[in-house]
Image (cartoon, rainbow, N blue to C red; front, side):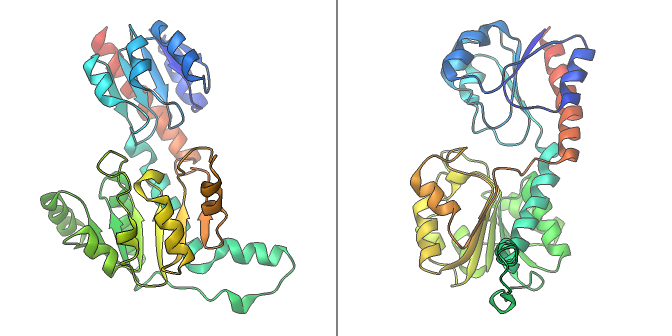
Length: 311
């Protein structure tokens, strides 16, 4: 069996596949035309978020049986095209969930206490203590949009820290069940969640239905001085609306770990990243040693199992 890896993966993952007799090729960040020209030689493709597995790529993958995503989101894979060709798509959201949840909390604290700004101020030899009066998370009403693997962990951690957690997910039945199980307050609608919450954190997949889910209408309904955190996917939020909400002071701050292009390339993207009220990180949600070890173990097992079923 031949496996192609096109995004950086833990060494342990590659070693485990080779130990099990799999022939592994690592060709990182191949241009689309190169990927299309070589994909026909492989039984499985392993990617993270950078490689775009389009319908054109899948059509050229004449012997491909499995596409493995080392993470949670599948928005960079044309899942429907894979289904039509009988290619199985697998991922490991549980392997990276805690890492993303912990980064979410880190970004929340960075926003509420202006930690990056205070650090940079002091490094510049300025003592501006009076300028950094922050907010406390305990007692704050926080909205969690999406109660999948990551969203559920974030909600639990927020509640443990004393926040009043209001949650929303599209399925009302699933929302009520999760709210009762986790002791959260279910929001009757997304609009109501944004209207009531002082801080909103996003944990939904990117699909055609969630494109620009967070619009100017939702952002403008928030109380002045609110916060938005996005560790899901950038395109879930209307970037122009987010900039406007920051410029007009509706949002006291926003934190983003995900970007409209990665790396960013448009002037307006950099304007958002460099905005004085924005904390931005380069999509590091899953970048922990522990998550890497879990990916190596769980994804290797799942990929080998999937390949064994077809051979």
